[in-house]
Image (cartoon, rainbow, N blue to C red; front, side, top):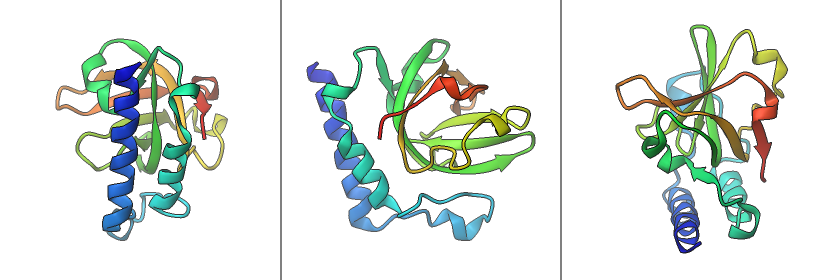
Length: 154
């Protein structure tokens, strides 16, 4: 329990520090394919603040711990920051923006895209069930094929 409270505190501090320095999706001016968080980082900060130890089950892996769980099927917890499209799929950035080192890429194949809500969970804190994979270059990803893999926390 202590470890989880520590992780929540780190997540909240990270969110607050991003808001304080004014980092609100500057990558959107560089690439029109990247979506933005409605309301900027304030939306994410509020959503992350709403997530407390009382509403996070014990078997959750926080987005920033995904690298330690490659090859395992888990439930990841974190905010969806932004999205971009790539050949044959849409990629959501969990924890950090899609193009940021250390983010978890949540991939939705074009064939499955129509099953998901239009907002693609951007600006929301979610739990995602899936197998954590890597491409060998430290890019961490989880593939979504069905909305039942996603639970919106806040």
